[in-house]
Amino acid sequence: MSDLLNRVKDARVWLSVRVPFLGYMTTRLRPRLSNPQDSVPTAGVAPDGTLVINEAWASTLTDPELRFLLAHEVLHPALEFFNRRQGRDLSLFNVAHDFVINAILKDFAQNLGDAMKMVAGGLYDETHAGKAAEEIYDEISEPGKGFSFSGGIGSDCRGDLSETFEGQSAHKGDQSSQRQIQRGWQGALEAARQTHETQLGQGSLPLRLQQILDNIKDPKVPWQTVLSSWIGENAGKDDLTYSQPSRRSESAGEILPGVVKTGLPDVTILWDTSGSMNGLASTILSEVASIVGELGLSVRLMVCDTELHADVEGLDNAEDIVPHIIGGGGSDFSPAFDKLRGEGNNSVVVAFTDGYISVPKTQPECLKGVLWILTDRGQRPCSWGGAIQLDKDGYAEEV
Image (cartoon, rainbow, N blue to C red; front, top):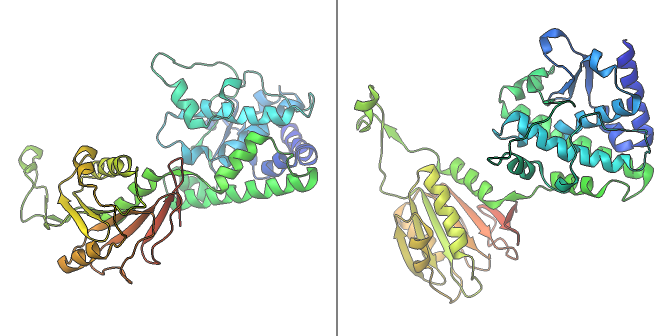
C-alpha cells in the first residue's frame, strides 16, 4: 500500500475517534490513487463513494488537511449532490455545494484546534451560512455575478469515476440505481448521527448539520413538485393514432400521429367550497393551471359544497377560475363524483379540501386516479385515493 493510502487509513481512524460522525461517513469511501486516464488533478468523488486521489497533489497536504479532504469529499454524495443537481451547471453547483460542506466542517473544526484544517483555496463564506446549495447556486449564477475561483479542489464531483455497477448505472441515468445509492447514503447518515451522539452526547453535532440531516430524513418537498409528478404519471400521454395525421406532418417531412380526442378532460379539479375552506383558491388553482398547461392537458373545474355550483371546462389560468369559486354551505363531494361516474369519466381528479367532507364509499372505477390535496390542518376524507398534506410554508407531505 502506498504511503498516501496509509495516511488516508490513519486519517479515517483519527476521525472515528475524534469526530465519530465524519469518521463513520469516511468508511463509506472507496479510495484509490488516480491514473492519467482519470484526469483528476486533485481529488474526485463519485455517487457510489469511489474516491480518486491524485497522489502528487495530496502528498503535499498536511495530516489536518487530509482529514478535512476526506470529510469534504464524502459529504458531496452523502448530502445528495448528484440527485439534487437537476441539470444545473456541474462546476457551479459543485461550488455551491462546497460552500455548504465547508461551513459544516468549519463548525466541527472549531473544537479541534488545528487538527482539522481546510485545504488551501477551499471555498468558505459565512454569508452563505444556513443556505441550501440550490439557493447559493441561484445567487452566484445571477447575470453579472460570474463566479471564478483558483486553487483548492475544484470540480470534484465526478459520476464517471464510479467503480461499482450501481454507481456506473446511476451515472448513466438509471433511476433505480440512483434511488438505491441515495437510500444507502441516507442510512449511513442516520447511523453516523447515532454513532456520534452515542459517543459524544445529544446535541454534539453542529446545528446546521442537524438541520440538514433532519430534512434528508424527513424531506420538505414543494407541493407543486409532488402534484406535477402525480398528474404526469396518472394522466399519461395523449392517445395517438395514424388515422388522422398531425397537421405538423407536412412540415416535418414524415407522417406524425394525430391525437385522439375523447371529449373528456385530462384533469378534473374538485374544489371544496364549504364554509371551512377559504383563502387558498387563487394561489392553488393558479399553480394547478400552470402545471397542466406545461403538460399540455385540458382542465375541468367542479365547485362543490353540498351541491355542484359550477362545472366549467377549458380553464387555464387563475383569472378564469376564481369567479367560479362559490359556496360556503355544508360539505359533500358526492354530487360531483356521481356526475363523473354517470359520464364514465376517465380523467384524473385533483380534489382540494380540508377533508371534512362526505365522499362516496368507493372511488368511481372509471377514474384514472384521485389525489386529495389537504390543507395544513386537514385530514383524509376516506381511505381511497392518494393524498398530500400542505404545511403552512407550502410544502407537501404524503399521507
